[in-house]
Length: 429
Image 1 (tube, rainbow, N blue to C red):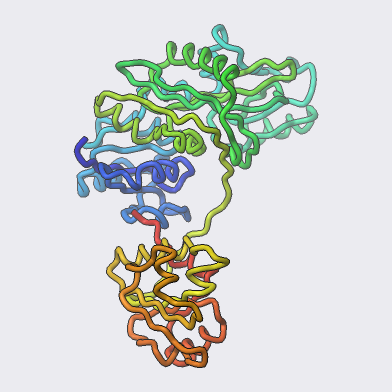
Image 2: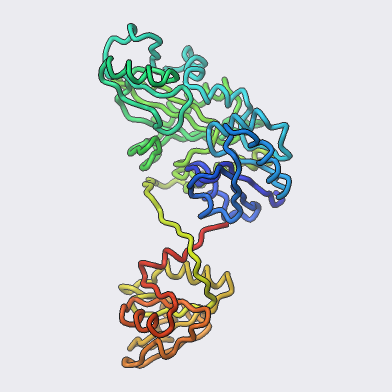
């Protein structure tokens, strides 16, 4: 495949960030991002990020189209459920193709009630209560017909609370409460070859509708999920990645919660087994001959917040300590190594400055670091490192507070201990 320019829209969602993780190191891809003018993570990982109105605003089509034309974007990768539908409905207005399934599929999947109606005679789906008089027991579960994550979703234990919720939001639907375990089934369909991949994962810990801990299910359960996937894919047309969610009721029956024709944030569980859904979806759109290979090892994902930063530090030289900085507890500090190679990519000069009592050459050889440094400064115990530093365009990294203070007092340059290095890591691509 020739190199392609891909616009992720919006880039700051969990979906967009999974697409970024999937494609950022692909030699065939140049990534761009667009999104509305709200605080989000996209500018911290996408070097090319643009502000456009959201799809519920006026003029979003013209704004997005302008970016696509200016930067010669070839594909738009939708990263939100509403965006999937909006792009499909306006596909003829963009000089770029959309990585997604057909509009008819997207419209059904965007509505819970349309999904349940579509599959009520084919699969087990939750009971939907159209009237309060139909509810014979509590709790029930209330959520928007068109929603994502766990926004405006509630377990309701009594009729009075339910009446208040429905009065405040008429677009909520009332479902039977399913008390069992929840699952996501990640799928990939080639429009020419059919369903090529289907594998379920248990949603062990969920926060704000996002699976924070997940692991693949056993073969027996997956066989059941495959049967569901075959029925869904016979009724709806899919192009590339999609998934569906199931939940067990109190009797142990799987019931269909939703179907989504897009990348899921925790698809990373299968990505690290070899199924790069985002890249495969691009290949599918290109009409390439696709083969899928999954590694056969156990995996469990656990997701948590990650820190990324913007700063205004300018530097082209880095002085770095050895003992307890680059080598800690007889191990290489891999985060610091990552930063140093990032700096090398930017053309920075790397200088080792150390008072180690060990032979520096032997230490660097032991840890395979012999060619990392442009210069090595070996000092005596009583030497002050500040006396040997050229402060022009320089930062200093050392575990010793006294050394950092001395360098800062003398040269007024930024100094860092190991816990601060994460500030300097730049993930933008």
